[in-house]
Amino acid sequence: MGVNVIFRIAAVGILVSVLCQVLKHSGREEQAFLTSLAGLILVLLWMIPYIYELFDTIKNLFTL
Image (cartoon, rainbow, N blue to C red; front, side, top):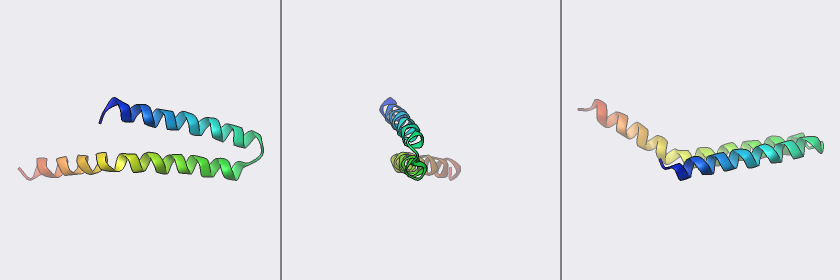
């Protein structure tokens, strides 16, 4: 995992939090919730290969 991935996750977090605050103050709580949910799903989709690699490494470690 490189530093680039961490910066992308941080950028998505900052963007989602700003959008959620703007949407909540304008009275659109449902869209704020959907925005935060979309940000979470995006980050989880980015993390799937790293999680798979972690489980593969753990599996190979204990089959020695």
